[in-house]
Length: 58
Image: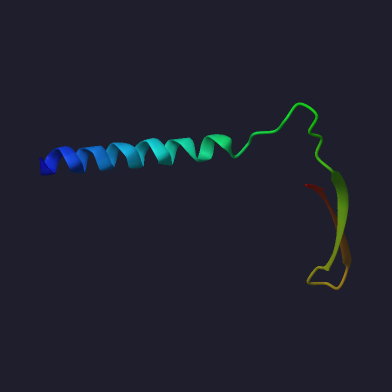
């Protein structure tokens, strides 16, 4: 009896753990992400300005 309950709990936990990540990337048909270019200013070890462009999507 104890083994049956333990195996049932393990099976339920395994089923729920696989079901949760499968909906993480779900988008509807009319979904369009909002993207823009972000400029990051940094200086290198010689004091020169370095501009890095990063694409950010929400």
